Image (tube, rainbow, N blue to C red; front, side, top):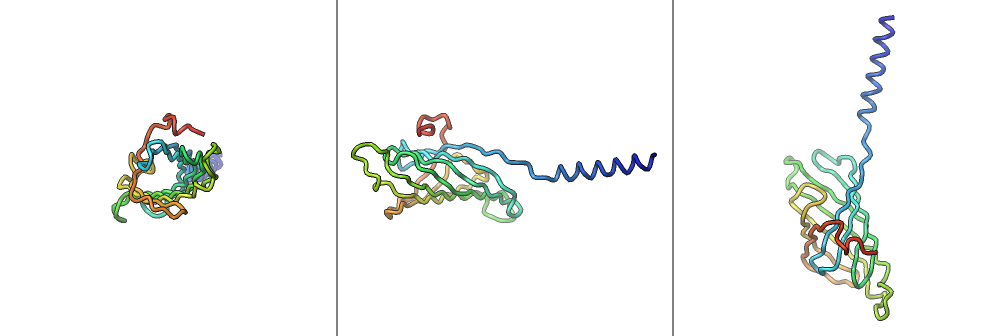
Amino acid sequence: MRKFVCSSVLVLLAVVAQLAALPVKAEAVAACYQWSLSATERWVLSIKSHSMLVTGERPYSVHGKYVSATCGVATISGSIVTNASSSHPPKGAHLGLWAHMVGGTGSPGIANETCFPIVMNCTTTATNPTPATWSCQSRSETPAYHGITTLTEVPVTDAQCNAF
């Protein structure tokens, strides 16, 4: 009987250890950023973590919307990679976004052909995926280079962040 109990306890411990090793389903985090190119434009992001790449580096998937007074709402996709490891300098994060324009606002006088996809490449020295500020370079498919701009975090309750 004692041998059976000890064997059962060992099996139970092995099962618990296996369950503890399973990855936890990550929840997405929302963030909203004001673009320095225009005070009314917002990049609203849903950021979800994935497993580690290498020591200290973690990828995140990004989905969301780009809100523009001229172009209305466009879907966005992208990714973030953070590096918190001192063995792989520099520490920081990189963000790549693609705004998939779906046309203008539909308002009279605003032509759909004025809205083009935007490619955004950003970096920060912060090691988290939602820093207060991103330093970015971007272009649209016109092709128009927007220069160096910033994305500055604003509360997700901001009226422009909630526009649709």
